[in-house]
Image 1 (cartoon, rainbow, N blue to C red):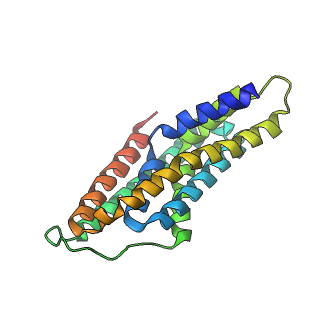
Image 2: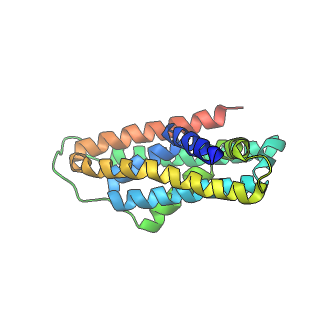
Length: 206
């Protein structure tokens, strides 16, 4: 029980650290509404769960053992983030800053939002390295390792979801402000720059 409590506390601290998932979830919630925001969160937690299960079954250990595998995942993840950022910047460029009238919602399908959440999380190899070094530390001595790691993976995804869902709700409350073209355009610019910067940082890391 003490290991479980410690793990939940640590998982909350990890969830609070902003990263590509935070940027993607906030952007989708502000631009497309709570429904798409929740779908992105669910996709992100699917990615978290996949990394946790990969750690449980030893697959993500390959990222630690093979520099080539890590670099391949790192460059792929960086390309995904840069693509998402450039797409947001392109959408902002198409906007009209002088027109301050409200615009219609730009919601995408929930399936697309879900896939964006999965890709954003699972394309980040740092999450895999973190999973394989983070989860095993909390396995109690004598406990069945595989079953415990699978349980911790599910709890990790649930804790992550508990952190992000209120964020989606708050973003939905503020969404009315972002329905004006000039504000939406600025938001797309900021989120685009953040995603591109995260992608470049991931690509440049050793």
